[in-house]
Length: 113
Length: 114
Image (cartoon, rainbow over the protein chains, first blue to last red):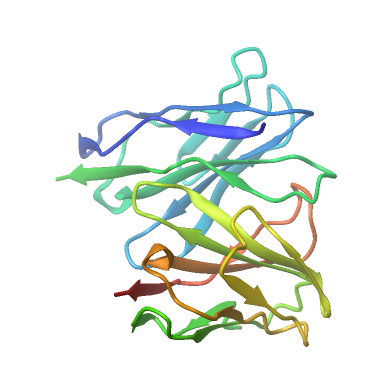
């Protein structure tokens, strides 16, 4: 079946450190891939997405590249800030299969000054 | 433009009680979704709707019911609350399906069943 696997958290970093959150997927067909972010006390917000192999999604300094050969979509940021502290969810959808989102378990990021 | 709103924010139920979680969106979105988020787990789809009058089951529909009488509203009904339904519930909406259409989420309802 279709599934998403994320690295377990929490990930604890100092401000300005480099961030990587790993995400791999299993899917039939050709999925679209997403990163959602959930700030404390809020709902999820779309952070970035990629719809085909080798696409790079980017937003707010975060990037992720759709790697079909390794079935991965790792999230990276060169210099994290305290305000990036949140839970990050990797997700996929299978186009034309009702496009429902399938989420990973989420990775909590804590950034300290 | 309020986006997706959910009420209540918090609720404690006793086993066997019933309640309705409210969800409304003002973006004229056709598609609406209910998810639950358990600690340490990702979101699981409970029910979804592709338009007024049309609903369908998601991954974990047992113990829940939904209706969609208007484009704006998509309430989730728990008939006989059980401790296993303790979770955070998120409603979401999107204009369409496909990667071009972002899902917008409400702030969530934290439900405890004791």
